[in-house]
Amino acid sequence: MRVLALLDGTIVDPEAPLLRADDLGVMRGDGIFETILVVDRRPRELGPHLDRLANSARLMGIALPERAAWERAVRAVVDDWPWETDPEMALKLVCTRGVDGGDGTPTGFAMGMQVGAETLRKRNEGVSAITLERGYAPDLTERAPWLLLGAKSLSYAVNMAAMREAESRGVDEVIFTATDGSVLEGPTSNVVIAKDRVLCTTPPSSGILKGTTQGALFRAAEEHGWRTRVEKFDTADLFAADGVWLASSVRLITQVRTVDGTPVSADADLHAELCKLYESNY
Ligand SMILES: Cc1ncc(COP(=O)(O)O)c(C=O)c1O
Image 1 (cartoon, protein in one colour):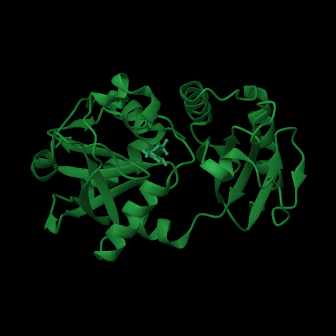
Image 2 (cartoon, rainbow, N blue to C red):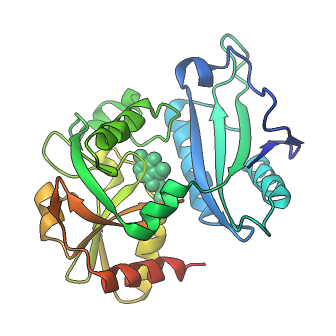
């Protein structure tokens, strides 16, 4: 199931070709994207997702179409989705730099898709994870802006290769680490740990994506008396924590059960509490 809309709000055939072969998004992965969860017609964290899309465009020097165009495309896909049979949708917003040698007009579209069975399994059952080196220092972000750390670019080949590496080792997920041993993020998620009713996640200044799901969880947690921290922590802290989660828009708050083959604390009540906090936003 796919529903595809252009930025003028037109619904187009998702099985018909849309991009030119010389689109820089195809030729170089030169573009940006967002993935948004929509439940019962309501997009979650749309504002933060559009803010992050704008930030990615700024970091990459892409002339992003105006916000109203994205909102129009989102509305068009939501209005066309079969909510009676599919109450959840993963909505992708994609913007490329446009065609090679063109006038810089970006290519943009919004596409709704079903949530995959594997994603639902991870949500419900929790995951095993391995740590893999990402190969950069957490202070590289400011020194080397051309590396686009913190931009949600279309160049996800490395992230997907890391997921395949995990699969080849019989593991569900990856937690990337920096050269100083600190925890970065997952290939498609943020890492959250809990210790003594304090939630902690890695700062975006370490070159990771600012998570909208983690942001929503922390917002609700603070309202309900939890303390939150956005600061660096090490792999050892995963094992010392009361719980470890991977947070992302479609997979939501996924409990981590093992890291590098060793069990981490995975309390069912604490997991249920965090899921409830996150859901209390909606
Ligand atoms: C690299 C990376 N980090 C973190 C996230 C989590 O972001 P969000 O919660 O906004 O989906 C994602 C989302 O796909 C991601 O790709």
